[in-house]
Length: 143
Image (tube, rainbow, N blue to C red; front, side, top):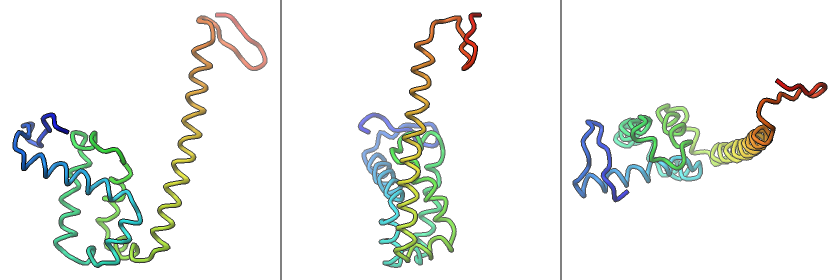
């Protein structure tokens, strides 16, 4: 991130203070992808603090493409969106809620990985077929 960082107005962040703020907010937003961290925040009352809730609202700018492209954990944006709802924030006090979210994320990653591997294999198989050939399961044809 030592390169120039974009600013919403299309300017670049030359200022070290702005760069540090960008990096801190980037790191914090990505921490929101961790359900156990959300549970930690909830149990310590952060979600009851109006200033903190307003800060979470402010962070929604990370959903904009010019900022989202820096995220390594895009699921943090979904959590940030859910944190806008008081009911969700209240539920996070319960460790079982955090555990459920964590399990759902793991299941998503497992399913996504398998599905992605199947798609990559199908693409590799397709690329190995000679050009101009269309293969049907029962009747291979040449075009």
